Image 1 (cartoon, rainbow, N blue to C red):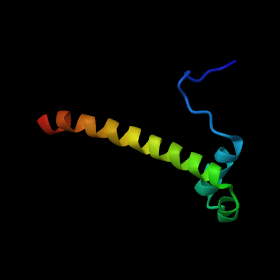
Image 2: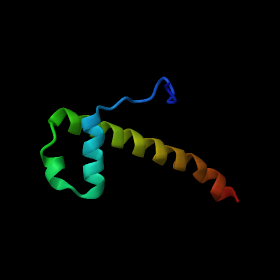
Image 3: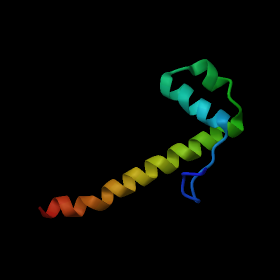
Image 4: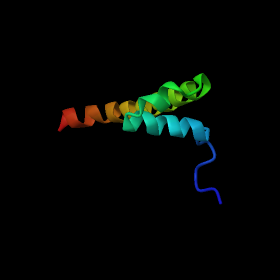
Length: 66
């Protein structure tokens, strides 16, 4: 059963492990990861950050008017 939207990213298991290692500070696992998983993780982080920053910036004019 698929619960995610059809346009969602489907990262490799190793990419998710890399993100978990970075989050927990497990630098050995992060350093030993493959370049393709690092690139995929980087893309996911950039997309996540960009979505949240743009979403936050769109609400600023409303806050300034109040």
